[in-house]
Image (tube, rainbow, N blue to C red; front, side):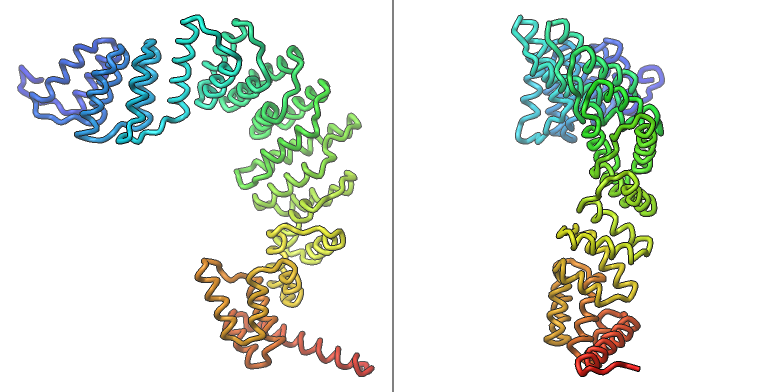
Length: 477
């Protein structure tokens, strides 16, 4: 191209040729091709610099690689953490410990501002580990555990398993932390079969008692895949080994379904829960008798917009002889509100008050919203008084006139808080109670709910009339 046809190759062509030469072990030829850049009047790209820098790192020529990186920073841009990590890997693969340390020092230079990521630390750690072993130094189990965890976090599960074999070969016993890391990594990599084998080894051969860190990933893998039967089979094995299955299941449901919103995870968790209940009946056991499990599922179903299923689960607690707690009722109140069943929502709220339980804020908010939209302004304000907040400030401001109310609303706007049903209910109720007809009209203008103002004013007036008749011993005909 260059000599016979007098053509000037594009930078892209140069880069591909140099990359092929570096990959096949012809570094000097790649460098000679690079020297033709200046002859053709071309300017390097970031890819150009990195192809050659990685080629130099592969053979341990770190000083030359750093000079190239210096040119790249001066003429174009600084390498990112992924580029540095790639160079570290190549130096480590060649056993160039000193080169790794020099490159690590270059990353730490203030002008670079490159923070090593987990993979960079893993590569560096593995290289130092190999140097320690090469020098005959004693490597303790904590080092093995840290490296296994780091490899798993970086997605290199196969390398972590090889390190595990090496650790066993060196005469160390594998602890529960290492087993948990590997089981989690295998599940992430889609190898639940190998994860189950490791779990069996940990339980049966090593006599360990795995916790949620080991069990939850395996159950979560089967649940996400719609394999409820396989998840239950794992639970059966754990139960047969005498492990605290109920506690492990609580952690699983909380982790897998409690957050809701993530696809159909809560529904998948509900499938596992239902199959467990069936199995429990068959074997007369009570693995699903914990309110914490129900709470996690109710929360997840509510957050994933499945209030009917959450309510069905709540009502099934009585059949299972499981007592709901404060968390249960706080979670189910918004579900009743979402389907418009205000009597049930209020019944749950009253039950909590009887037991001196304090609902979560979201339960208060849902209840006020539901009461407000059903026209029960006074009841909504009663709940508002229980939970306090801006709504009470608005209610008190109604005693001092419309201007004070506007000031409260403006304060909310300054703080980025949008007036919602609680505040609107407080304004309507406050104006109707303390301001008279003109103030009620002002309330309608403020909250833009004129029909609600009128209806609530009628109810308030009717209530006052009835109270007066009762006070004078009269009865309405």
